[in-house]
Length: 382
Image (cartoon, rainbow, N blue to C red; front, side):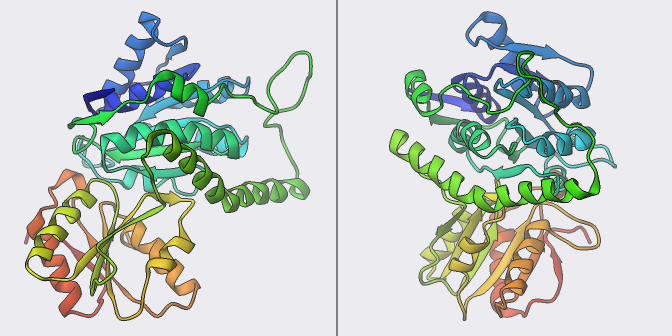
């Protein structure tokens, strides 16, 4: 079925199709319409789920930790300060290996106070033990949420789906919505191996000593090391179901490119259109769109990085004192593997500032004419 929906409505439809059983969320712009729509869906009986109203995002995640521990399928959504308020409990969720799925509608972190977009809220949570996927279209949002339930439950790692506030969350696009019976076959009810059961008492999230703690953390890391195989298998199955395919890194016009810009989220749409424009003028430019921050697709990145090509990385986020987080991850991979490529690093679009085609053309020009020389701030007021 084809339908024109916003990014946030695509999330709500995906949660409904996935038959989540417990949903808990606290309203925060620009996520609020997800919570509103899901409360309507649950209230009307369209989805047989418990919608739990709470007083904060901290309580929303605490609720889902308890619910997921009983073996049911759980979901929440948040943005910015709400995600930050969950920070402590994100570790509890991943440490307990609970397959909670959460959407973060990217919004810049205060102060100063703002409701507009950048990715700093989600990238700041990259070490909490959650997978992170970044979307650039409403269709990808719907598909990623559905697939993330299966990925999380097969790997016992919680998943976070991220997309840019307002640029995607409130933009309407036509999407293809699978039939419920298709998703029921693809995503059967959760069958937890370990769960709270009065007939089979066990200890969950109890205290531990140094001689066990490190092994528990190792097991989580090992699960992340193996997770790419799980992710690939799930998306292969989804491709067979819908005909739509997704990769950890998606290339565009890179086979003969002499300059390639690496980016994520809605900025990739602007890069995509700019590449098309510049190609018509005979310029050999291309793009790599990264869909994952965790697990970071190291092998896939190295596959696409070639000698004699100049690369740039465009971040809509900032780690003060370091720069863009995706740039940092890319540099780490290249350094760790002895790759000689150096990349130009660009920061743009913080706090919802537009990233224009003119900005991207200037970035490609700089990549071609200047050696990498630290962070380049795009569109900064003089």
